[in-house]
Image (cartoon, rainbow, N blue to C red; front, top):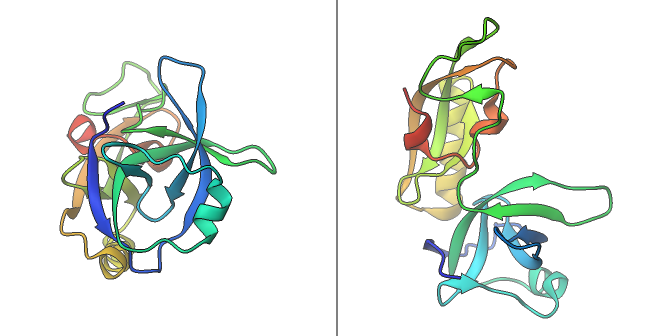
Length: 176
């Protein structure tokens, strides 16, 4: 499976954890190394890096320049690894981006998002500029990744502020 990847120089401040990645169109779940700060899985030669012992690989100290692919969390059961999916997530069924829903409960919300301009994936969403700038500064000091950007966007939701559904979504698909 060929993935859309980006490179990152490890600073030592990143947190890598074992996670289970769901492979689309199959029933497979594979054990991978997931970086919580970058919301990405470790890759090698354009494919997933699948160490024999993911726990040991995560705890063994990760160094150098890594190839990563965007991923997003879809859940975690108690005492198990996080489950993630590759790429950009689809918006929640009760949340629509870019157009107003027909529902009478739908309201418009604003967010400031931190996103990767190469992959287009939203990393995180914030209510105010101060929090967004603080998060941007933290990510920048950690990664010095020049493709991280901030953007204001508008979205509509009938379940209230749905910032959690913005994470992993393509910034181009949800901006009004």
